[in-house]
Image 1: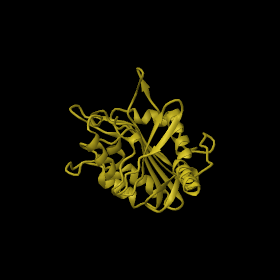
Image 2: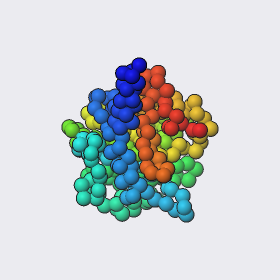
Image 3: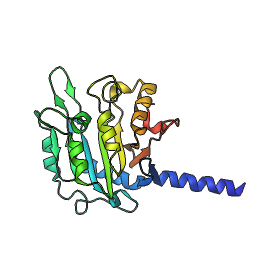
Image 4: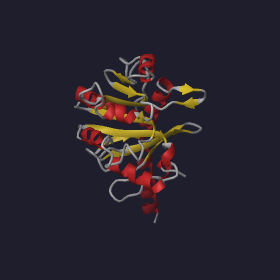
Length: 244
């Protein structure tokens, strides 16, 4: 009985501190991912009248920068990206997209009657771009690579993750899935229109996970923390990643 209990404790410890990227069996350290999330919060978050403005960023960095023990700082992480330039570009009205050496970012493009979400601006071809910014970023580093896609609001179930909509982002996710990097798609908030649709939202997240892109939710409570959403195959999505 003691041996079984001890094994369970060890397993829980390992699950908390490392999570498996199902694409290639390599680990993203959840503590390091939390520190990367904190770096994004400190450098790229945009707050207007007390409300966070939607944006997304994606990085393609050395694999070691996503593994245990790494602490990102302005001196050792994304050193070629200037935070104020990133924020300025993603706030542009006509073309709210930033394309750097190891980071891309996007705000929301207002088209009048509708908006083009950040995820679509990065993952899909758009007017004036033959290839998506995400594809260009992936091409810059393929070996020993870690790619993280962070969006403030989760990709919407009704459009972004809906196969029946021609401009969904699922093809972009499949292109990312084929890239030989360890991967994480991270969101902080659940898109407001998905809050009351728990089952639909869970099914939408599984569309990401089953394309071999691990999903996480990182939130700010007393301190920042990232939760692995799970959901591979028939397993459920973790409760921290779903509406209450």
